[in-house]
Length: 231
Image 1 (cartoon, rainbow, N blue to C red):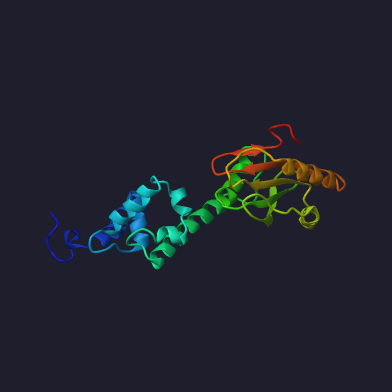
Image 2: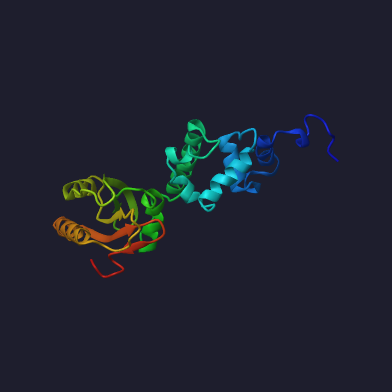
């Protein structure tokens, strides 16, 4: 039985309990709310850090991806969350996003559109604006380099075919995959998507290079030109 001393858990502040739980039981034992409570550090006189965290998570239907999309302004609208705590939340969720992106090894073989989605969704799937990327491949269809070609607004980006081919030559790539995201979540190719794909295909052919696929990424799905026989 635990002695009732000022150092026993019974007497700890509510805000300290998630930290101690992590030390005693490990990170996997903590709920999302408890982990978020550690990040924000403290609650208020009338609400513990854990309860404040539960309130924030309830607002986003307990969806961590949705939490990561909240802006500084949106976070500070929660009572008990000032700029410093909001910045801590944004930094933590961004670290989580970057970790997901780095979990995919650079040297990965592209043998399906699903693999392309798994490589690129953590990088561009949740962005509020469009980015255009190129995955450069060797003769075994293994990724040897990936590069952001451009980023733009909500509806499109500018694509420079010369840069794509120049980078391919610099990395001795024999093929590449075109990838961009649709912030709207719509999984279909626009007329301009088809036009730029054809333009890049024709240019690549002049250098004996192949466009393996062009994949449009959204948060929860993707569209593949190759799968749809549009290449």
